[in-house]
Image (cartoon, rainbow, N blue to C red; front, side, top):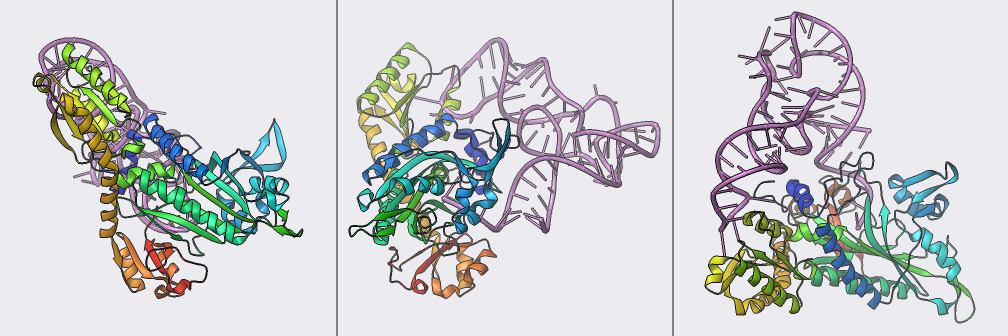
Length: 470
RNA sequence: CGGGCUGUGGCGCAGCUUGGUUAGCGCGCUUGACUGGGGGUCAAGAGGUCCCGGGUUCAAAUCCCGGCAGCCCGACCA
Protein backbone atom coordinates (compact mmCIF):
# COMPACT_ATOMS: atom_id res chain seq x y z
CA UNK A 1 0.00 0.00 0.00
CA UNK A 2 1.38 3.37 -0.94
CA UNK A 3 0.95 6.76 0.59
CA UNK A 4 -2.48 8.29 0.61
CA UNK A 5 -4.54 5.19 1.10
CA UNK A 6 -7.93 6.50 1.96
CA UNK A 7 -10.78 5.41 4.10
CA UNK A 8 -12.89 8.30 3.07
CA UNK A 9 -13.12 6.94 -0.43
CA UNK A 10 -15.16 3.80 -0.55
CA UNK A 11 -13.05 1.94 -3.10
CA UNK A 12 -9.88 2.20 -1.03
CA UNK A 13 -11.51 1.36 2.22
CA UNK A 14 -11.20 -2.44 2.42
CA UNK A 15 -7.51 -2.56 1.61
CA UNK A 16 -6.80 0.08 4.17
CA UNK A 17 -8.83 -1.73 6.74
CA UNK A 18 -7.15 -5.02 6.19
CA UNK A 19 -3.76 -3.68 6.92
CA UNK A 20 -4.72 -2.33 10.30
CA UNK A 21 -7.60 -4.15 11.84
CA UNK A 22 -8.70 -7.05 9.71
CA UNK A 23 -7.11 -10.13 8.29
CA UNK A 24 -6.90 -10.50 4.58
CA UNK A 25 -8.89 -13.70 4.68
CA UNK A 26 -12.39 -12.41 4.44
CA UNK A 27 -12.94 -12.97 0.76
CA UNK A 28 -10.45 -15.79 0.50
CA UNK A 29 -11.67 -18.41 2.90
CA UNK A 30 -12.68 -21.12 0.50
CA UNK A 31 -16.41 -21.71 0.39
CA UNK A 32 -16.98 -19.77 3.58
CA UNK A 33 -17.14 -16.38 2.01
CA UNK A 34 -17.38 -13.16 3.86
CA UNK A 35 -16.73 -14.45 7.33
CA UNK A 36 -14.71 -12.45 9.73
CA UNK A 37 -11.11 -12.23 10.78
CA UNK A 38 -10.03 -9.46 13.11
CA UNK A 39 -6.38 -8.70 13.76
CA UNK A 40 -5.24 -8.01 17.31
CA UNK A 41 -5.27 -4.25 16.97
CA UNK A 42 -8.84 -4.25 15.70
CA UNK A 43 -9.91 -6.72 18.33
CA UNK A 44 -8.38 -4.51 21.00
CA UNK A 45 -10.61 -1.70 19.78
CA UNK A 46 -13.62 -4.01 19.89
CA UNK A 47 -12.84 -5.13 23.44
CA UNK A 48 -12.78 -1.54 24.67
CA UNK A 49 -16.02 -0.81 22.84
CA UNK A 50 -17.59 -3.97 24.21
CA UNK A 51 -16.70 -3.01 27.77
CA UNK A 52 -18.35 0.39 27.35
CA UNK A 53 -21.49 -1.17 25.91
CA UNK A 54 -21.61 -3.92 28.50
CA UNK A 55 -21.39 -1.45 31.34
CA UNK A 56 -24.28 0.60 29.97
CA UNK A 57 -26.38 -2.48 29.29
CA UNK A 58 -26.01 -3.53 32.91
CA UNK A 59 -26.82 -0.02 34.07
CA UNK A 60 -30.04 -0.35 32.09
CA UNK A 61 -30.83 -3.40 34.17
CA UNK A 62 -30.18 -6.21 31.71
CA UNK A 63 -28.16 -9.28 32.67
CA UNK A 64 -25.94 -11.37 30.45
CA UNK A 65 -26.88 -14.93 29.54
CA UNK A 66 -26.02 -17.39 26.82
CA UNK A 67 -28.25 -19.40 24.49
CA UNK A 68 -27.61 -22.11 21.89
CA UNK A 69 -25.98 -21.51 18.54
CA UNK A 70 -28.31 -23.98 16.80
CA UNK A 71 -31.99 -23.30 16.41
CA UNK A 72 -34.52 -25.95 15.34
CA UNK A 73 -35.96 -24.84 12.01
CA UNK A 74 -39.46 -25.11 13.40
CA UNK A 75 -38.76 -22.34 15.92
CA UNK A 76 -38.05 -19.85 13.19
CA UNK A 77 -41.20 -20.76 11.33
CA UNK A 78 -43.38 -19.82 14.27
CA UNK A 79 -43.25 -16.13 13.41
CA UNK A 80 -44.19 -15.73 9.76
CA UNK A 81 -42.64 -12.34 8.98
CA UNK A 82 -39.53 -13.18 10.90
CA UNK A 83 -38.79 -16.38 9.00
CA UNK A 84 -39.65 -14.74 5.71
CA UNK A 85 -37.21 -11.96 6.46
CA UNK A 86 -34.37 -14.29 7.30
CA UNK A 87 -34.95 -17.39 5.15
CA UNK A 88 -32.62 -16.46 2.29
CA UNK A 89 -29.66 -15.81 4.51
CA UNK A 90 -29.82 -18.82 6.79
CA UNK A 91 -27.04 -21.36 7.14
CA UNK A 92 -28.62 -24.73 7.86
CA UNK A 93 -27.03 -27.82 9.37
CA UNK A 94 -28.49 -30.99 7.93
CA UNK A 95 -26.00 -33.58 9.17
CA UNK A 96 -24.52 -34.24 12.57
CA UNK A 97 -23.15 -37.21 14.44
CA UNK A 98 -22.47 -38.93 11.16
CA UNK A 99 -26.07 -39.03 9.99
CA UNK A 100 -28.76 -36.87 8.51
CA UNK A 101 -30.81 -34.99 11.08
CA UNK A 102 -34.55 -35.53 11.29
CA UNK A 103 -35.01 -31.79 11.57
CA UNK A 104 -32.47 -29.34 10.18
CA UNK A 105 -30.80 -26.95 12.59
CA UNK A 106 -30.38 -23.31 11.70
CA UNK A 107 -27.24 -21.48 12.75
CA UNK A 108 -28.73 -18.48 14.58
CA UNK A 109 -29.08 -15.33 12.50
CA UNK A 110 -30.47 -13.72 15.68
CA UNK A 111 -31.89 -15.35 18.76
CA UNK A 112 -35.46 -14.15 19.23
CA UNK A 113 -36.84 -17.60 18.68
CA UNK A 114 -34.56 -19.65 20.94
CA UNK A 115 -34.68 -17.12 23.71
CA UNK A 116 -38.44 -16.84 23.52
CA UNK A 117 -38.78 -20.58 23.78
CA UNK A 118 -37.12 -20.22 27.18
CA UNK A 119 -39.06 -17.09 28.09
CA UNK A 120 -42.25 -19.10 27.73
CA UNK A 121 -41.01 -21.43 30.48
CA UNK A 122 -39.39 -18.82 32.67
CA UNK A 123 -42.17 -16.26 32.73
CA UNK A 124 -45.24 -17.15 34.79
CA UNK A 125 -46.22 -14.13 36.81
CA UNK A 126 -46.17 -10.35 36.53
CA UNK A 127 -43.56 -10.66 39.29
CA UNK A 128 -41.19 -12.17 36.72
CA UNK A 129 -41.43 -9.02 34.63
CA UNK A 130 -39.72 -7.22 33.20
CA UNK A 131 -37.28 -9.93 32.15
CA UNK A 132 -34.21 -8.21 30.74
CA UNK A 133 -31.57 -10.39 29.10
CA UNK A 134 -28.57 -9.75 26.94
CA UNK A 135 -26.28 -12.12 25.10
CA UNK A 136 -22.84 -11.58 23.59
CA UNK A 137 -22.52 -14.02 20.75
CA UNK A 138 -21.64 -14.53 17.13
CA UNK A 139 -24.39 -14.96 14.57
CA UNK A 140 -24.45 -15.98 10.93
CA UNK A 141 -26.30 -14.40 8.03
CA UNK A 142 -25.33 -15.64 4.60
CA UNK A 143 -25.00 -12.24 3.04
CA UNK A 144 -25.20 -11.92 -0.72
CA UNK A 145 -22.53 -9.27 -0.76
CA UNK A 146 -20.30 -9.19 2.28
CA UNK A 147 -18.19 -6.21 3.14
CA UNK A 148 -15.41 -6.34 5.66
CA UNK A 149 -16.78 -5.42 9.12
CA UNK A 150 -19.82 -3.66 7.72
CA UNK A 151 -21.62 -6.75 6.54
CA UNK A 152 -19.79 -10.00 7.21
CA UNK A 153 -21.49 -13.37 7.04
CA UNK A 154 -20.49 -14.04 10.60
CA UNK A 155 -20.31 -11.30 13.15
CA UNK A 156 -19.94 -10.69 16.85
CA UNK A 157 -22.66 -8.76 18.54
CA UNK A 158 -24.76 -8.20 21.57
CA UNK A 159 -28.44 -8.92 21.37
CA UNK A 160 -30.81 -7.89 24.09
CA UNK A 161 -34.18 -9.56 24.57
CA UNK A 162 -36.76 -8.35 27.01
CA UNK A 163 -40.30 -9.08 28.09
CA UNK A 164 -42.62 -6.55 29.71
CA UNK A 165 -46.12 -6.45 31.16
CA UNK A 166 -47.34 -3.58 28.98
CA UNK A 167 -46.75 -2.11 25.56
CA UNK A 168 -45.79 1.14 27.17
CA UNK A 169 -43.14 -0.46 29.38
CA UNK A 170 -41.66 -2.17 26.36
CA UNK A 171 -41.53 1.02 24.33
CA UNK A 172 -39.95 2.99 27.14
CA UNK A 173 -37.30 0.32 27.54
CA UNK A 174 -36.54 0.09 23.82
CA UNK A 175 -36.03 3.85 23.81
CA UNK A 176 -33.93 3.75 26.94
CA UNK A 177 -31.55 1.31 25.26
CA UNK A 178 -31.49 3.43 22.12
CA UNK A 179 -30.50 6.51 24.04
CA UNK A 180 -28.61 5.44 27.15
CA UNK A 181 -26.73 2.53 25.67
CA UNK A 182 -26.41 3.05 21.94
CA UNK A 183 -26.49 6.77 21.28
CA UNK A 184 -24.41 7.35 24.35
CA UNK A 185 -21.70 4.88 23.35
CA UNK A 186 -21.61 6.05 19.76
CA UNK A 187 -21.42 9.74 20.55
CA UNK A 188 -19.50 9.78 23.84
CA UNK A 189 -17.13 6.88 23.18
CA UNK A 190 -16.82 6.42 19.41
CA UNK A 191 -17.16 10.17 18.87
CA UNK A 192 -19.46 9.45 15.94
CA UNK A 193 -22.56 11.64 15.79
CA UNK A 194 -25.77 9.71 15.09
CA UNK A 195 -29.29 10.55 14.07
CA UNK A 196 -31.95 8.64 15.94
CA UNK A 197 -35.41 7.86 14.68
CA UNK A 198 -37.52 4.97 13.51
CA UNK A 199 -37.57 2.94 10.33
CA UNK A 200 -40.34 3.03 7.77
CA UNK A 201 -42.46 -0.10 7.39
CA UNK A 202 -40.32 -1.04 4.43
CA UNK A 203 -37.06 -0.86 6.34
CA UNK A 204 -37.93 -2.26 9.71
CA UNK A 205 -36.80 -5.55 11.27
CA UNK A 206 -38.73 -8.64 10.21
CA UNK A 207 -41.02 -9.31 13.14
CA UNK A 208 -40.99 -5.85 14.71
CA UNK A 209 -43.79 -3.32 15.03
CA UNK A 210 -41.31 -0.50 15.26
CA UNK A 211 -37.57 -0.39 14.69
CA UNK A 212 -35.63 2.46 16.28
CA UNK A 213 -32.24 3.16 14.77
CA UNK A 214 -29.00 5.08 15.15
CA UNK A 215 -27.73 6.29 11.79
CA UNK A 216 -24.23 7.59 11.27
CA UNK A 217 -22.66 9.27 8.27
CA UNK A 218 -19.38 7.84 7.06
CA UNK A 219 -16.51 9.76 5.50
CA UNK A 220 -17.84 9.18 2.01
CA UNK A 221 -21.27 10.59 2.81
CA UNK A 222 -23.01 7.22 2.99
CA UNK A 223 -25.16 6.20 5.91
CA UNK A 224 -24.48 3.31 8.22
CA UNK A 225 -27.09 1.79 10.49
CA UNK A 226 -25.04 1.51 13.64
CA UNK A 227 -27.56 -0.03 15.99
CA UNK A 228 -31.23 -0.84 16.33
CA UNK A 229 -33.78 -1.29 19.09
CA UNK A 230 -37.05 -3.00 18.22
CA UNK A 231 -40.51 -2.95 19.69
CA UNK A 232 -41.71 -6.45 18.97
CA UNK A 233 -45.21 -6.02 20.35
CA UNK A 234 -46.74 -9.43 20.94
CA UNK A 235 -45.55 -10.82 17.63
CA UNK A 236 -43.40 -13.44 19.32
CA UNK A 237 -45.18 -13.84 22.62
CA UNK A 238 -48.34 -15.10 20.92
CA UNK A 239 -46.79 -17.87 18.79
CA UNK A 240 -44.30 -18.77 21.54
CA UNK A 241 -47.04 -18.60 24.12
CA UNK A 242 -45.23 -16.34 26.57
CA UNK A 243 -47.89 -15.48 29.08
CA UNK A 244 -48.08 -14.19 32.63
CA UNK A 245 -50.72 -13.91 35.29
CA UNK A 246 -51.38 -10.26 35.93
CA UNK A 247 -52.12 -8.74 39.32
CA UNK A 248 -55.81 -9.51 38.96
CA UNK A 249 -55.13 -13.13 38.10
CA UNK A 250 -55.87 -13.22 34.37
CA UNK A 251 -53.49 -14.42 31.70
CA UNK A 252 -51.82 -11.98 29.29
CA UNK A 253 -49.16 -12.16 26.62
CA UNK A 254 -45.96 -10.21 27.28
CA UNK A 255 -44.78 -7.22 25.23
CA UNK A 256 -41.23 -7.48 24.00
CA UNK A 257 -38.16 -5.70 22.73
CA UNK A 258 -34.93 -6.78 21.11
CA UNK A 259 -31.87 -4.69 20.31
CA UNK A 260 -28.36 -5.14 19.01
CA UNK A 261 -25.08 -3.65 17.93
CA UNK A 262 -22.19 -5.50 16.38
CA UNK A 263 -18.57 -5.45 15.26
CA UNK A 264 -19.92 -3.20 12.52
CA UNK A 265 -19.19 -0.44 15.02
CA UNK A 266 -15.49 -1.03 14.47
CA UNK A 267 -16.15 -0.39 10.79
CA UNK A 268 -18.14 2.72 11.63
CA UNK A 269 -15.29 4.05 13.71
CA UNK A 270 -12.79 3.65 10.91
CA UNK A 271 -15.09 4.96 8.22
CA UNK A 272 -16.14 7.99 10.21
CA UNK A 273 -12.75 9.13 11.44
CA UNK A 274 -10.15 7.68 9.11
CA UNK A 275 -8.14 10.08 6.99
CA UNK A 276 -5.57 9.80 4.24
CA UNK A 277 -2.97 8.66 6.73
CA UNK A 278 -4.94 5.89 8.38
CA UNK A 279 -7.12 5.38 11.38
CA UNK A 280 -7.81 8.07 13.93
CA UNK A 281 -8.92 6.68 17.25
CA UNK A 282 -10.68 8.48 20.04
CA UNK A 283 -8.50 7.87 23.12
CA UNK A 284 -11.27 5.89 24.82
CA UNK A 285 -10.99 3.20 22.16
CA UNK A 286 -7.26 3.24 21.50
CA UNK A 287 -5.60 -0.02 22.60
CA UNK A 288 -2.52 2.15 23.00
CA UNK A 289 -3.22 5.81 23.71
CA UNK A 290 0.41 6.82 23.65
CA UNK A 291 3.36 5.22 21.96
CA UNK A 292 6.84 6.18 23.07
CA UNK A 293 9.18 5.79 20.10
CA UNK A 294 12.92 5.37 20.31
CA UNK A 295 14.13 7.24 17.25
CA UNK A 296 17.65 5.95 17.32
CA UNK A 297 19.28 3.58 19.72
CA UNK A 298 21.64 4.90 22.37
CA UNK A 299 21.92 4.30 26.12
CA UNK A 300 20.64 7.78 26.96
CA UNK A 301 17.74 7.64 24.53
CA UNK A 302 16.73 4.13 25.62
CA UNK A 303 16.74 5.08 29.29
CA UNK A 304 14.79 8.27 28.69
CA UNK A 305 12.17 6.39 26.66
CA UNK A 306 11.71 3.73 29.33
CA UNK A 307 11.40 6.39 32.02
CA UNK A 308 8.85 8.37 29.99
CA UNK A 309 6.76 5.31 29.25
CA UNK A 310 6.73 4.47 32.94
CA UNK A 311 5.73 7.98 33.89
CA UNK A 312 2.86 8.03 31.38
CA UNK A 313 1.68 4.60 32.54
CA UNK A 314 1.54 5.70 36.11
CA UNK A 315 -0.49 8.70 34.97
CA UNK A 316 -3.07 6.09 33.91
CA UNK A 317 -2.65 6.00 30.13
CA UNK A 318 -2.34 2.89 27.99
CA UNK A 319 1.24 3.16 26.77
CA UNK A 320 3.35 1.19 24.29
CA UNK A 321 7.12 1.48 24.11
CA UNK A 322 8.48 1.01 20.61
CA UNK A 323 12.22 0.40 20.78
CA UNK A 324 12.48 -1.87 17.76
CA UNK A 325 15.41 -0.02 16.29
CA UNK A 326 16.08 -2.83 13.84
CA UNK A 327 13.17 -1.41 11.88
CA UNK A 328 13.58 2.06 10.43
CA UNK A 329 12.12 4.93 12.37
CA UNK A 330 10.07 6.08 9.41
CA UNK A 331 8.45 2.70 9.10
CA UNK A 332 7.55 2.50 12.74
CA UNK A 333 6.16 6.00 13.00
CA UNK A 334 3.98 5.44 9.95
CA UNK A 335 2.78 2.15 11.45
CA UNK A 336 1.50 3.86 14.57
CA UNK A 337 0.01 6.64 12.57
CA UNK A 338 -1.84 4.12 10.43
CA UNK A 339 -3.12 2.40 13.56
CA UNK A 340 -4.49 5.66 14.84
CA UNK A 341 -2.61 5.99 18.14
CA UNK A 342 -3.65 9.47 19.27
CA UNK A 343 -0.26 10.59 20.60
CA UNK A 344 3.30 9.66 19.74
CA UNK A 345 6.20 10.69 21.93
CA UNK A 346 9.40 10.53 19.93
CA UNK A 347 12.64 10.31 21.83
CA UNK A 348 15.74 10.96 19.76
CA UNK A 349 19.32 12.04 20.49
CA UNK A 350 19.01 15.47 18.89
CA UNK A 351 16.06 16.64 20.96
CA UNK A 352 17.23 14.83 24.03
CA UNK A 353 20.55 16.70 23.99
CA UNK A 354 18.51 19.81 24.64
CA UNK A 355 16.28 18.09 27.18
CA UNK A 356 13.33 17.82 24.84
CA UNK A 357 11.21 15.17 23.09
CA UNK A 358 8.74 15.51 20.24
CA UNK A 359 5.03 15.07 20.94
CA UNK A 360 2.96 14.31 17.85
CA UNK A 361 -0.80 14.75 17.73
CA UNK A 362 -2.18 12.13 15.34
CA UNK A 363 -5.53 13.79 14.79
CA UNK A 364 -4.15 17.14 13.78
CA UNK A 365 -0.87 15.75 12.51
CA UNK A 366 1.16 18.42 14.19
CA UNK A 367 4.20 18.04 16.38
CA UNK A 368 5.84 20.09 19.03
CA UNK A 369 9.05 19.99 20.98
CA UNK A 370 8.35 19.56 24.66
CA UNK A 371 10.75 19.59 27.64
CA UNK A 372 10.96 16.23 29.40
CA UNK A 373 9.27 17.58 32.48
CA UNK A 374 6.27 18.77 30.47
CA UNK A 375 5.54 15.57 28.57
CA UNK A 376 2.89 14.15 30.90
CA UNK A 377 0.95 17.40 30.81
CA UNK A 378 1.28 17.76 27.08
CA UNK A 379 0.12 14.20 26.45
CA UNK A 380 -2.80 14.63 28.81
CA UNK A 381 -4.00 17.78 27.12
CA UNK A 382 -3.93 16.15 23.69
CA UNK A 383 -5.74 13.03 24.92
CA UNK A 384 -8.35 14.91 26.88
CA UNK A 385 -9.32 17.06 23.92
CA UNK A 386 -9.14 14.44 21.19
CA UNK A 387 -12.53 12.76 21.57
CA UNK A 388 -14.49 16.00 21.52
CA UNK A 389 -12.45 17.26 18.57
CA UNK A 390 -13.21 14.16 16.53
CA UNK A 391 -16.88 14.41 17.36
CA UNK A 392 -17.01 18.08 16.41
CA UNK A 393 -15.25 17.38 13.14
CA UNK A 394 -17.59 14.52 12.23
CA UNK A 395 -20.64 16.58 13.20
CA UNK A 396 -19.57 19.52 11.08
CA UNK A 397 -18.92 17.16 8.18
CA UNK A 398 -22.37 15.64 8.45
CA UNK A 399 -24.07 19.01 8.68
CA UNK A 400 -22.23 20.23 5.61
CA UNK A 401 -23.45 17.16 3.72
CA UNK A 402 -27.06 17.41 4.82
CA UNK A 403 -29.62 19.46 2.92
CA UNK A 404 -33.17 20.44 3.81
CA UNK A 405 -35.35 19.87 0.78
CA UNK A 406 -39.01 19.91 -0.16
CA UNK A 407 -39.51 17.47 -3.00
CA UNK A 408 -38.71 13.91 -4.01
CA UNK A 409 -36.47 15.08 -6.87
CA UNK A 410 -34.47 17.30 -4.53
CA UNK A 411 -34.23 14.49 -2.00
CA UNK A 412 -32.74 12.22 -4.67
CA UNK A 413 -30.23 14.86 -5.67
CA UNK A 414 -29.12 15.61 -2.12
CA UNK A 415 -29.29 11.98 -1.02
CA UNK A 416 -26.65 10.84 -3.50
CA UNK A 417 -23.65 12.58 -1.93
CA UNK A 418 -25.05 12.99 1.58
CA UNK A 419 -28.30 13.21 3.49
CA UNK A 420 -31.49 15.00 2.65
CA UNK A 421 -34.10 15.98 5.19
CA UNK A 422 -37.56 16.05 3.71
CA UNK A 423 -41.12 15.82 5.00
CA UNK A 424 -42.06 12.15 4.69
CA UNK A 425 -45.44 13.00 3.22
CA UNK A 426 -43.75 15.03 0.48
CA UNK A 427 -42.19 11.87 -0.96
CA UNK A 428 -45.61 10.60 -2.02
CA UNK A 429 -47.08 7.10 -1.85
CA UNK A 430 -44.40 5.49 -4.05
CA UNK A 431 -41.61 7.72 -2.75
CA UNK A 432 -39.52 4.92 -1.32
CA UNK A 433 -39.69 2.99 -4.59
CA UNK A 434 -38.54 6.03 -6.49
CA UNK A 435 -35.67 6.61 -4.07
CA UNK A 436 -34.66 2.97 -4.39
CA UNK A 437 -34.15 3.46 -8.13
CA UNK A 438 -31.24 5.66 -7.12
CA UNK A 439 -30.05 3.30 -4.37
CA UNK A 440 -31.36 5.76 -1.81
CA UNK A 441 -33.38 4.77 1.22
CA UNK A 442 -35.16 6.44 4.09
CA UNK A 443 -32.68 6.02 6.91
CA UNK A 444 -35.05 7.12 9.63
CA UNK A 445 -38.05 9.26 10.51
CA UNK A 446 -37.95 12.00 13.11
CA UNK A 447 -39.98 14.94 14.28
CA UNK A 448 -38.98 18.18 12.52
CA UNK A 449 -36.90 19.21 15.53
CA UNK A 450 -34.91 15.98 15.35
CA UNK A 451 -36.57 14.31 18.31
CA UNK A 452 -38.20 10.91 18.30
CA UNK A 453 -41.74 10.40 17.05
CA UNK A 454 -44.42 10.01 19.69
CA UNK A 455 -47.32 7.55 19.53
CA UNK A 456 -49.93 10.03 18.27
CA UNK A 457 -47.80 11.62 15.51
CA UNK A 458 -48.97 11.57 11.91
CA UNK A 459 -46.20 9.85 9.96
CA UNK A 460 -46.77 12.12 6.94
CA UNK A 461 -45.64 15.10 8.98
CA UNK A 462 -42.44 13.51 10.21
CA UNK A 463 -39.14 14.31 8.59
CA UNK A 464 -37.40 11.59 6.60
CA UNK A 465 -33.61 11.44 6.54
CA UNK A 466 -32.70 9.92 3.20
CA UNK A 467 -29.36 8.86 1.77
CA UNK A 468 -27.30 6.06 0.33
CA UNK A 469 -26.22 3.43 2.78
CA UNK A 470 -23.90 0.52 3.33
C1' C B 1 -31.17 -13.41 -10.28
C1' G B 2 -30.18 -8.81 -13.58
C1' G B 3 -26.03 -5.16 -15.54
C1' G B 4 -20.62 -4.40 -16.17
C1' C B 5 -15.62 -6.67 -15.88
C1' U B 6 -11.24 -9.67 -14.76
C1' G B 7 -8.15 -14.32 -14.41
C1' U B 8 -0.09 -13.50 -15.60
C1' G B 9 5.52 -15.10 -8.94
C1' G B 10 2.95 -13.71 -2.00
C1' C B 11 0.04 -8.86 -3.37
C1' G B 12 -1.07 -5.10 -7.25
C1' C B 13 -0.54 -4.82 -12.40
C1' A B 14 1.71 -4.29 -17.80
C1' G B 15 2.14 -7.27 -22.10
C1' C B 16 -2.86 -9.54 -25.82
C1' U B 17 -5.35 -5.13 -30.67
C1' U B 18 -0.80 -6.55 -34.94
C1' G B 19 1.44 -14.54 -32.41
C1' G B 20 8.23 -14.48 -32.84
C1' U B 21 14.70 -14.72 -28.60
C1' U B 22 15.27 -15.94 -21.88
C1' A B 23 7.32 -13.12 -19.97
C1' G B 24 8.30 -7.70 -17.64
C1' C B 25 7.29 -3.73 -13.73
C1' G B 26 5.96 -1.88 -8.65
C1' C B 27 5.31 -3.57 -3.65
C1' G B 28 6.67 -7.50 -0.44
C1' C B 29 10.46 -11.38 0.80
C1' U B 30 16.07 -13.14 1.58
C1' U B 31 21.34 -11.61 2.17
C1' G B 32 24.96 -7.73 2.72
C1' A B 33 26.59 -2.76 3.22
C1' C B 34 25.57 2.22 4.19
C1' U B 35 21.91 4.30 7.23
C1' G B 36 18.30 5.96 10.74
C1' G B 37 14.15 12.99 12.76
C1' G B 38 9.17 10.36 8.62
C1' G B 39 6.92 3.29 4.71
C1' G B 40 15.50 5.31 3.43
C1' U B 41 19.63 4.11 -0.39
C1' C B 42 22.68 0.79 -3.07
C1' A B 43 24.03 -4.14 -4.49
C1' A B 44 23.12 -9.26 -5.03
C1' G B 45 19.24 -13.03 -4.86
C1' A B 46 14.82 -16.36 -4.40
C1' G B 47 10.10 -16.88 -6.38
C1' G B 48 5.98 -18.33 -12.73
C1' U B 49 1.47 -25.12 -14.74
C1' C B 50 0.60 -16.83 -17.96
C1' C B 51 -7.17 -20.17 -14.58
C1' C B 52 -8.40 -25.22 -17.05
C1' G B 53 -9.28 -28.25 -21.58
C1' G B 54 -9.20 -28.49 -26.72
C1' G B 55 -8.08 -26.23 -31.58
C1' U B 56 -5.29 -23.17 -35.43
C1' U B 57 0.08 -22.49 -36.42
C1' C B 58 6.84 -23.81 -37.74
C1' A B 59 5.66 -20.97 -33.20
C1' A B 60 0.25 -19.16 -28.48
C1' A B 61 0.13 -15.31 -22.28
C1' U B 62 -1.39 -13.28 -27.21
C1' C B 63 -5.95 -15.88 -32.19
C1' C B 64 -10.57 -19.45 -32.10
C1' C B 65 -14.10 -22.85 -29.34
C1' G B 66 -15.73 -24.80 -24.68
C1' G B 67 -15.44 -24.93 -19.45
C1' C B 68 -14.24 -23.01 -14.49
C1' A B 69 -13.22 -19.27 -10.95
C1' G B 70 -13.40 -14.49 -9.06
C1' C B 71 -14.54 -9.12 -8.71
C1' C B 72 -17.62 -4.69 -9.06
C1' C B 73 -22.82 -2.28 -9.28
C1' G B 74 -28.02 -3.56 -7.66
C1' A B 75 -31.80 -6.78 -4.73
C1' C B 76 -30.97 -8.76 1.27
C1' C B 77 -28.87 -6.65 5.81
C1' A B 78 -26.32 -5.22 12.73
